[in-house]
Length: 232
Image (spheres, rainbow, N blue to C red):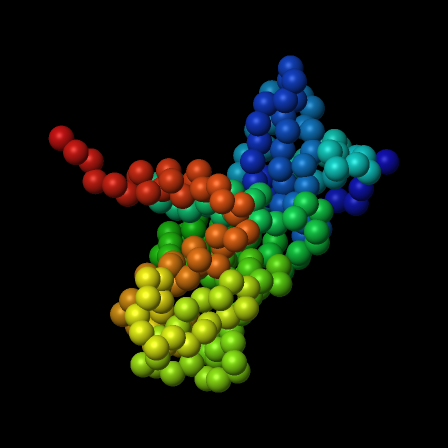
C-alpha cells in the first residue's frame, strides 16, 4: 500500500545492489530513507539534490521503497560556492535531524534556503538563518538578547555559550567568547554590524558541535578546500 504523496527533496543518494539506489529524502514528515528501484532509468535522473519532488513510498519499516517519484517544480541549479553550501545543508540534516520526526517548518525553510542559493543571494546569512532555525525547531535553541540568568544582554558585555541553554556573562575575554553587541546584532539579523556574520558562524559551530557526534562535516571540509587560495 502506498503512503500518501508528499513533497520531498533528495538529501543524498548512493548505489544499492545491482540497479537500485538508497536515497535519503527530506519531507514535511521528516527525513526518511527508501530504496529506489530501477535507478538507472527516468526515476534515477530525479534522485539528485535540489529538485522539488512528489514522493510516495511503500513499507512500514525504517527502510521503505519508493513507489512513485515525480518532479514537482523547476530544479534549483546550484554551482560553485552555492553548490557546496547546499550540500552542507543536506549533510547537516542527515547528521542532526532524527529519522521520521515530522518537522514541516524545517522542510519549508530548507526549500526557501535552496531557492535563495539558486538565486545567487549572499551565502552566509542564508546558512546562518537555516542553522538557527534547525536548532530552534529541534528544541536546542536559546535566547540571543538575554543571558541564562534572564538578564538582558548588554552591548559592552562578554558572554560564553553554555550548550543548549544560552549565554553566561563572563568577566574577562576567553577563547570562543562573544561580545554583547554581536549577540544583539544576531538577534536582530543585522548583518551590517561589523563582525556580526563572523560571530554568527562561530556561534553556530559551537552550538551544532554537540549534535554532530565529534565527526567533521565532509561538505564543510570540501568548502574550505574550495576557498583556499591556489599555490603555484
